[in-house]
Length: 326
Image 1 (cartoon, one colour):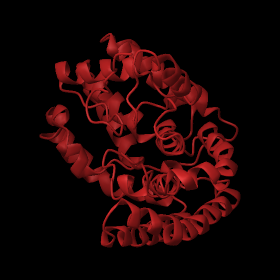
Image 2 (cartoon, rainbow, N blue to C red):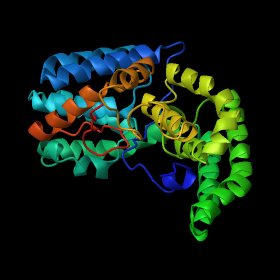
Image 3 (tube, rainbow, N blue to C red):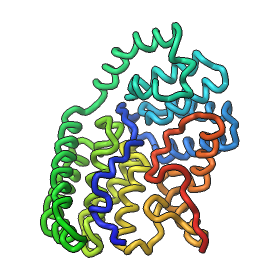
Image 4 (cartoon, rainbow, N blue to C red):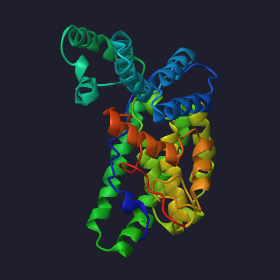
């Protein structure tokens, strides 16, 4: 099976979250993500109080917190019967982009959906939402949204081509020049604004989709592409700055590895599920960017099933990532 742009076309990744807050200067977000993974390891052992303690230390140490951490902390507090604390983190989550509809859709939070607590949350929502909107870089957001919409229109052209060869020709002759302009625009944004992700624009889907499209044009194109090679260390720096999540980077880098190598090079486990012989390589790649191991991710899925919590695992694969035999 060929892994190119149109294997990826319109895979809209609905599990992405949104938020946006200015980060503390010189904050080390690789350490942030290591702490989050440590908390997740405790959750896997159902040591919820200890896990919540780690999240609380993160909240006190960083000006920008990814929405997902507030979402998990809210549920942990509720599981520990600490309703006031749960409401406090839920409100912090709203100020970080958590929408009222999404809160209602989380069945674990049902105890907060009725009564005076919910009235207080609903009354606070407009002001907290306004606080969230005010923290976003609206200029960068508008630029990223226009780039995403343009990318989708160009990708739509592939649907009119019949057969793999016709689609690959379109990808290399029509989509590639467009994508190169997109990558150059992103480089300019990195210099002028920073990486347009959850922290900066409240959306961690638009730009990661654009980069993933670029990395999945064709194997021939990926083998000679220099733009992503130039961009890659800047994206890693964006992880360190808290502007790009480890998952976003893993996704776009996984596409490059899978396409350029014809699916022979071990990646992060999303596009190419690992087997026992490549699992250590996959986990090492994940560790370098602050992403949980495959085994821990699968353990968290089990805890979700047992408890009814939702850990908002931002993964390409739904459910557990299978580990194949060698």
